[in-house]
Amino acid sequence: MKKSKLIASAAAAAFVGNAVHAALYKPEKKAHPVIEKDSVNVERYRKNLSQAIKIKTISHRISEETDWTEFEKFHSFLESAYPLISSKLEKTVVPPANLVYLWKGKSNELDPIALCAHQDVVPVSAGTEADWKHDAFSGDDDGEFIWGRGALDMKNHLICVMEAVESLLEEGFEPERDVYLLFGDNEEVVASADNGATAIMNYLKEKGVHLDSVLDEGGAMLPVNVKGVLNNKYLAGIGIAEKGYADIEITVCAKGGHSSQPPKHTALGRLAGVIQDLENNQFKAAFSDSMKSLFDSIGRNCTYPVRLITCNLPLLYPALLQVCKLIPPAASMVRTTTGVTMANGSPAANVLPQRASVTVNFRAMPGTTTEDLVNHIKKVVKENDIEITVLNSKEASSFSPTDSRCFNIIAKLAKAIEPNAIVAPFLVMGGTDACYYEPICENIYRYAPFKVDTSLLLCTHGTNERIPVSAMADALAFFKSYIREAGDKD
Ligand SMILES: [Zn+2]
Image (cartoon, rainbow, N blue to C red; front, top):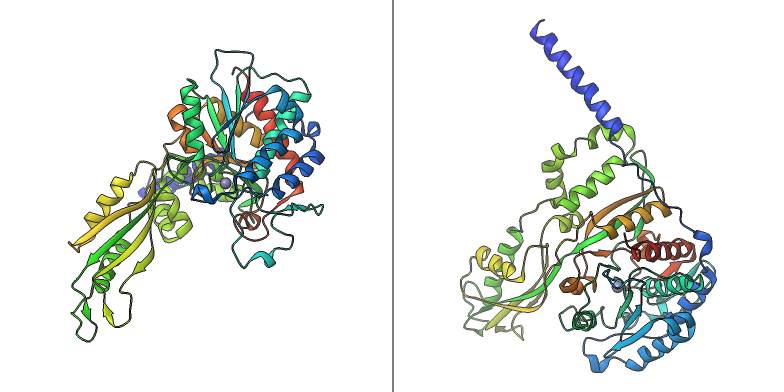
């Protein structure tokens, strides 16, 4: 055979091979359970979520500024709204207002499961109160939405867990394992080891509890519709890790003096060089296993002609990584980010600064510690005479496994509730209480089973936070099924 013919037949064979590969590159078929969507009480959930939103459980960084009587009101409300939970579960308040409910299981041999949520909410920014279509603490239910602070972050989740447990108790269900409901009191404000979740973890640790799994906020069921590529899909992201957080101040000192006789570079001028060095020397980007798994899940769900490309993802990773680095939201998923946020110079326009400082907000990838961040600054900044102060930091979590019993249950239920869902693990950008349970648990997942579109999610912590009534039945069914399955032996 001639050389050109040989090349042509090899190319044809490769083309056919790729076409077959693309045709077979589909989501794995798994049997999923039937979810009893009819056995949920949406009406009672709506009423109770409305009531819960009315109670102003606003947390403040300085504990003394928090009105703890609102948390007491919230506890009394839960007690009266959920009579079976109140009579059958063991309740402990870990001071000041963290709630621990223990539902004893039939077996003492198995590790308990935990469902977490935080009771606290953020305040409404001063001056924006009038922008709300319904008052921020009205809990108004207009038939389509329930409005107010905490409607998505995360009284919706907390009340949903309570509702699921109450409903299972009404049905006479008894879990095999112990089930803990763990509700922290200051997630929104204290991202450090002395927050409410750590107090709960220490309380459990002292009791000798090792948790089988933790399920907290972090992921959601987001609609995705890219015409001709991903048609009417949902992305159910299960958070398996979260990034670290650090505010680091860098200070440059100088002589100061009158601004009529300035040196070539003032302290601020030298600081500009520090900022440039930091921005020009970003952390190395790389795809984690969870990111590759996310791409793979999305790739398998693309329409056929697109799968001709996505079935070769590993070959595309180097190019894809370069693209991700150019798009800030994508870049934040593949590397530790460096955000220069605040700067300080002299106190007056005609005075040379004696100290100039800049605050940099880093979001660290799992595996990068605060110490690594400080070393990075020392390495990339050319200016020798700098002071580095860590103002505030929280280490990144470790990765939880994607082959554990509970991960599989969450994935299976998400898919059962929404057959068009692409279920995938992902890295949570913000912080949650979940990571504080690491000393007593290896399987920590962040997933809220509410079908909410991105524009609504953006109202979280902002104006007009609200939850669609249409998302409620599925979420209730998810938690009931989750407790049934995860609370079982295997
Ligand atoms: Zn939250």
